[in-house]
Length: 275
Image 1 (cartoon, helix red, strand yellow):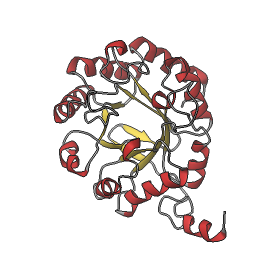
Image 2 (cartoon, rainbow, N blue to C red):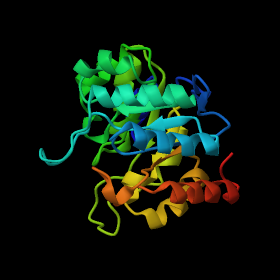
Image 3 (cartoon, rainbow, N blue to C red):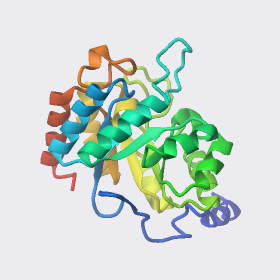
Image 4 (tube, one colour):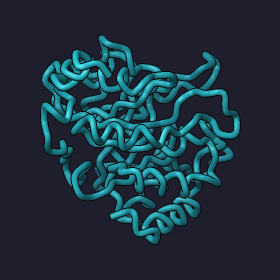
């Protein structure tokens, strides 16, 4: 890396040179970053109140504070389920209030911000919108924490610069999440870039998480990949949970059921890597 490029990177707001201490997201009863780990879980798509209550109950039983669920769904095919929209967000808020959980849900455009802000605690920017710069600027002008997913083919530099757009607008409550990148490999849905975790931890002060569901697309390797992520220095893990995955309206193959979720959670705790 040239000296000029290194100097430019060191001036970034996301850079560890700009801020040496870790950024910690402290929202309600959830703390993301710092000395403790976080497990974020929930369905790919919010489908009904009963579905979300079942998942939220499992999280509460496990003592986990953060529920994820999609209401606006960017789908490859226009004929696939696109989410329940605002109705899904209403369900999420209702369930989260009942169980005392923090919520994360994806928004796809700046026009959805005001609506979503009434219902959820953390905005998620999905992989397909990582370089939607108008959206990044818009969430940067809010005061809500933002979970930014790495794009399907984005370099780490592009990923960090996408986060920079948010911080540049004044919002420093940003989390980065590695969710696998597109490569030639077909054994997994995407290729989990474990090396991204220590690099992002070294070069930025932002919390770094790993989405083991989207990166692998395989329930049988979620636990070892989650362990690898924690061993590499990740601040947290995201996993998709559905009461009946085979009937899910999206991502049916990669979501775990409630019993599988509890086994996954126990495996993480027993590993000694999660604290």
